[in-house]
Image 1: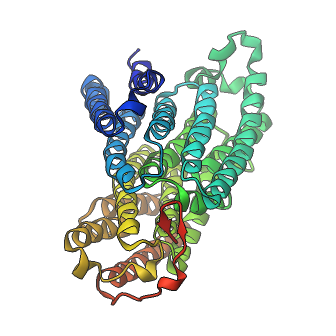
Image 2: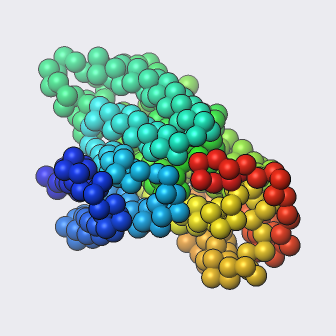
Amino acid sequence: MFQPLMLIGPALVCLAYAAGLTRRHPTGWSYAVALWVSVTAMASIALDWSRLTAGQTAPIMMAVTNVIAATSAWDSVGWLREHPHIAPHRYYLWWSLFWGAVLGIAGAQNLGLAWLTVEFSTLTSGALIIEMGDRHSLEAAWKYILITSVGLILGLIGIVFLYASLKYQGSGWATLNYSNLHAHYQHIAPIVRTIATIFIVCGFGTKAGLVPFHTWLPDTHSQAPSPVSGLLSGVLLGLALFTAAHVVAAVPVAPGNWISGPDLFTGFGVLSVAVGALALFVQRDIKRLLAYSSIEQVGLISVALGINSQAALFAAMLQFTLHAVIKSSLFYGAGHLTIRYQTRRLRNITGLMARYPAYAAAWAVGMLALAGLPPLGLAYSEWLILRQLWQHHAYLTITVVATALTLTFAALAYHLIRMLWQDVETAPQELVQIGGEAL
C-alpha cells in the first residue's frame, strides 16, 4: 500500500505545472520542488523504516531513489540559474515524470509494470536531454531512446515467453508478479526459461549500460543536464540491472543448463568492468569520464549478482547505494565546473586547487571515493565482491576484476592530479559554445 503512495510526490509537481505555478514563479518553484522532494524522501525512509532495517531490497532502492532525487532537485536550483535558456516549467514537468518513473521501477513487484516504467523513464529522461536545445543533445537523445528501446523490445519478447507459459492460470496482469513467477516457474519449460532469461538480461542490460549494449551511455551523459545525469547514472542504471536480477531469481535456470542468469551477469559484468576501466584513460570530456566510470561500476554490480549468494547480493546492494551517492555528487560538481571553465574538456579544466580550493577539496574526495581508496565507501563494497569471488573459486573473474580496479584507480588518480595541479592550458580558439556550455 505504501509504495504507490510515493507517486503522490511526482504527481503533485505535475499538477502544479498544469496549474501554471511553475511558469509564474520559476525561482520560488525551484526551491519549493527541492523542499517537497526532500520531505518525500524523509517520509519514505520514516514510514518504511522497519523494512529498511530488515534489509529488504525494494525499500532500500526506494529510499536511495528518493534521496538522490532530492539532491538532484536541489542541484537543479543552481543549475537552472546557470542555464537561463532552459525553460524551468518544462524542465520540472519532465523531471517530475522521470522521478515518478524511477520510483515506479524501484517499487515494482510485477515484471510487466517494471518494463513499462523502465520504458517510460527512457522517454522522460530523453525529453530532458532534448531540453538542452542543440543538435548534439538531440542526437544523444535520439541515440539513447533508439538503442535502449530496441533493447527493451528484446526484454519484452522474453516477458511474452514467460507470460505465454503461464497463461493457463487466467490471472491476467498478476501472472507476471515476481512471487507468482517464482511459485510456478517449474511449469515453464527449461528451454523457454533459458531463452526468456537471455532476452530479459540482454534487454534490461541495455538500459543498465552493460557492455556491449553501452554505446548510448557516454553520449547521453555528456549531453544530459547534470542534475539528470546524477539521477540517471546514480539510480536508473542500477535499478534496470536489479530488475533483471529479480527475474533471474524468480525464474531460475538449472545450473547444469548451457547458460543461466548468473552466467550472463558474470560475463557481461566482467566485460563491462574491463572496458570501462580501460576507456577511462583516453577520455577527454569530464562527463564522459564519469559515464565510463558508471559502466565499470554497473559491471561490478553485475559481477556480484552473478555470484548468486546472499552475501554477494548484499555487496551488490551496497555497491549500488554507495555508487549512487558518489556518482550523482560528481555529476553535479562536473556540471558546475563546466560552467566556471566554460568547457567540458579535461585538458582545460586544470589548476583547480589554485582557482577554486573548496571545489578542489570536494572534487578530490569524490574522485578518490569513486576510485576505491580506503576507507571511503566503495573500497568496502568492492572488497566484499572480491571476497565473494574468492570464496566461490572464481579465480579468472577475480583476476580480471582486480586488474580492472587497479587500472580504474590509476586512471582516475591521473585525471584528478591533472585537474588539481596542472597549469591551465589555454586554447580559447577551440571552445565551441553549445547550449550554454562550451565543448
